[in-house]
Image (cartoon, helix red, strand yellow):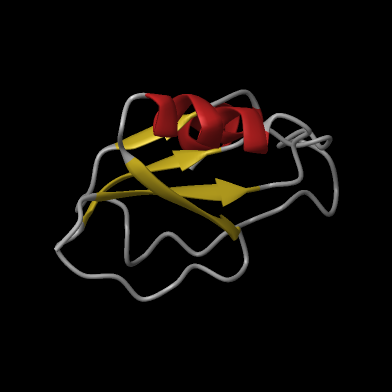
Amino acid sequence: MQETILILDFGSQYTQLIARRVRELNVYCEIHPFNKIPAFGDEVKGVIFSGSPSSVRQEGAPVPDLSNIRGKLPLLGVCYGAQYLAQS
């Protein structure tokens, strides 16, 4: 079983760069859209939330369902991802 980091993409132009940096550390990662969080098992060791062109205060901003993630895995938010984690 390969340890995995999930990257949830909120539309940032830097999501691919985040994934490349993680992979340069010899860590397997997968990018998924924020609204299609995959089912996962014990192989997932953490989740990175990317940035977004939106603001958390903006109407229609991305709102993922974190019920299967929060409190179970380490979470790292970058830009919008950090704003969203702080707000929720």
